[in-house]
Image 1 (cartoon, one colour):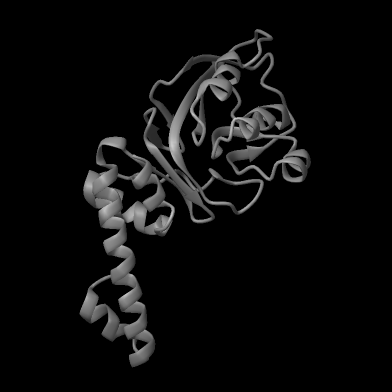
Image 2: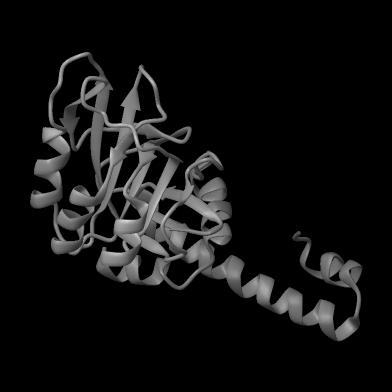
Length: 215
């Protein structure tokens, strides 16, 4: 899996999205609102998942806190929420400190992130989130499970699925199809490179489309 993760660092996110479409027969890219909020760093790594649910109890996000400490280095922490108000911060400066210390690759959130100035200044840690909000989850959400399938941005994420994300968006690569998706992504990248060169050389978009049949 390490070789696959390294390979997915080198291909375009758009190519990965197209490859998931073809190999898996379903969409793998998340909704546009799940976007980078801290920096433009690329994130690639296996998903470590957390599920939160609405509550009026004042409870710490214990499953998330434990997972940040326990997940293998290089993991991407993926947090999903059910019910309630999605525009509150499920991630902030202290969780970032833990993720940074444990050498995780990034965080993907179906809710908000806060403490942006602190995260940028002290950690430069990549966080993709639905929103930015100063609001706390305390009294609004509680963590109910970790390392379970979750839905974020319209896509189901299983623990161990590979997250590939950059300024183009977030793509989920099913772990059992990762090798095939990587091979297809490389093929797409190479074909687009050749097509772009032809378009420039011939000064014709139509000729490039005619030869490669891809847009």
